[in-house]
Length: 353
Image 1 (cartoon, rainbow, N blue to C red):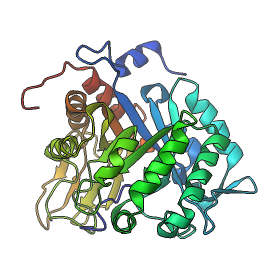
Image 2: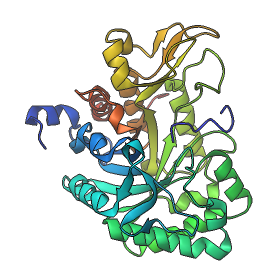
Image 3: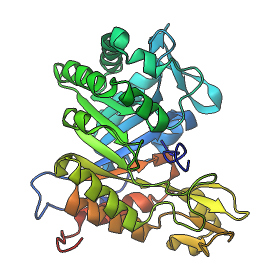
């Protein structure tokens, strides 16, 4: 999820705090914006939940599940290819418990399948989505959603894998098959997509998704992208939303993805959560760049609370809400989550936004 450009450039809080986080009544929208958060199970399910202000999110995506070689997601009470903290196996019971907790405040909970880097334990997605296995794979996903008590499934097949599946003519037919099966049970189907050629879901699949989460980040990373650039600028967010509106995603189903992390260059540590940045650089982390962004320079690129708030305002004007990768990376006082809700509660500005 986090490395989408690699293929090409490669409630136990005070009432007052809840009121700060949640926007007031919508002024120009009939539906409240969605707030989608990915929970990184590979970092530890409990850790991710404990670091999240749960009432602030309308949808949680449990990341990531993959099938084994036979297409099974569960065997003997354990997930076949979903890794927990320190490589531990994830049990069905632990996920069921988490789903119950996450749904308690009214949020929808989905399982996200695939990911930016498919793990070695996974079966071959190209083979599993081919005509001979397509219906069986879709049925296995629906059964998993039923077993875990989920509200739906999120598809996060990216980059070269997505391109290969689509070129074989198997992506949109699989999505159509899965959508029909999920909707028959009243469940959601969502996706994550990049915005570069070869990394985008095909237009023919768009009508089947309830939400399209646009991963508007990773324009540059530790081993890809133009030297000296920022990895997730406001201008990039505007371009990405305009692109997907033009490709036919309806505004209410379009969700702007924002990063709770940054990248370092020129001798800086390459990967940073915003949580780490705010602790190590409490003043500088208020800007989007720590250091000077230029080729060969030492700098860190990330999104400050001010930029996250501005992107949330943009999402309110042009889209249906905001998506976060990933929730454990926020600060202990939920600085970025609060910034999202400030933006989503701000008045909508239409002109040239």
